[in-house]
Image (cartoon, rainbow, N blue to C red):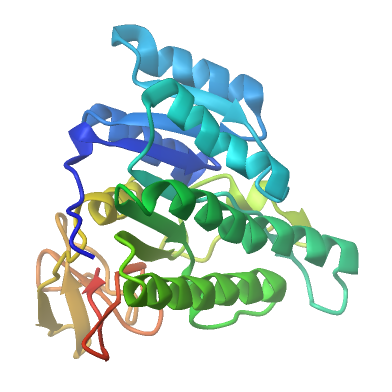
Length: 297
């Protein structure tokens, strides 16, 4: 796996779920940094308007309407990227849905539909991406969640799907490394993000669904995704947080709040990386039978 990842301004990036939220924020940031983007989502009109905005200064974006829960609609995303830009370098599996409700109250058909999008959409996307990237090298970024590591009530089926995404990403990463296929697999695991996620979710609870604070802007996730796209071994620096005596990870700006205690962190420029992280980005790869893990806060 000797292929180097290109700088963003030389990349073509495919993004699923690109009509809003994290996907849209990632596309906007990528274009600002000189990348070309291929946007995929079910909302064709929103994609068209976004591409028109991106292309005012020259062609930087193209789009294709697709439902990633259907395997037959995912390969055409890759084909469209090849036809429009000659190929792609990074594939971001971002499309996802959620359901609020107790597991025994959520209809089985809705559970299956969620897994078709959140898990099988990732599987189909990885298959299409590896098919193209195995000869030229590149990166796959899968979007998990903090609930990839821990389940939460009332979002049990969503938690299960994100656990599955983590397991699939980890296994695929090791298999590609073993076969010396130069495709790097990263998993970004955001916490609560300020997007229409709760409003778009199906609900089987009487209350209005909403995020539990602290809530972070989608641009923070976009930054992590794009860092994965051009840094196969991005390193993090860490420091002890005197406010809560737990492990923190240095962040790029600001004076954040410690997620454990809810108090401002006295070590400026740090964020908590504990049991409930704001976001973690993992790029594990196997070297000489050992697994080296890099956690980029």
